[in-house]
Image 1 (cartoon, rainbow, N blue to C red):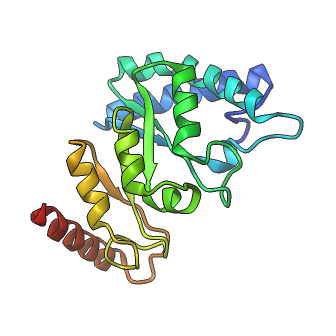
Image 2 (image 1 turned 120 degrees about the horizontal axis):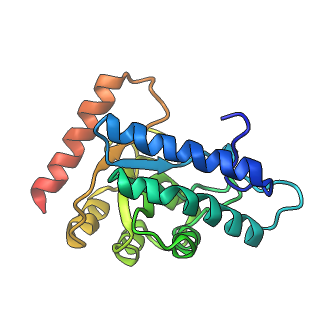
Length: 201
């Protein structure tokens, strides 16, 4: 990603970044994928002299140049809010929704991450799921302890119930950052936890 940046004021960097996103759309289509999540905190932090408003305009321009390719590839590009520990640009669902509205393209929608919502939002995860039900295209389930559902203190029952209640039909993906228990144990325990909850709905 050297030379690429979402919020750079340099038009050449913007063009290269948009071109790279278009390449990712085509790659995703070739692999049979239908969703790409834009996280990339280090490629979107505010640069010196760039305000949040300026960064939003720049990001909307870059995404706007890429989204037609996503549409033609039948791939969704989902913007992921992250906590302030990770980035200073787009930390909440409301901020992501603002950017999504500026881009105004059906292929550019919201990604909701449980750990990020717990760490950055004042509203509950369930409330945010209901509030942004119309623009959410992908969900990460993860605990604040960096492990999967059922492996920490986060209660995933109301979260999965909220997804059920809003008739969310996209992927619910386990994203962890602590692999010390082993990948297979994390996968099994996370799946068991979610299946038990879903069976009770």
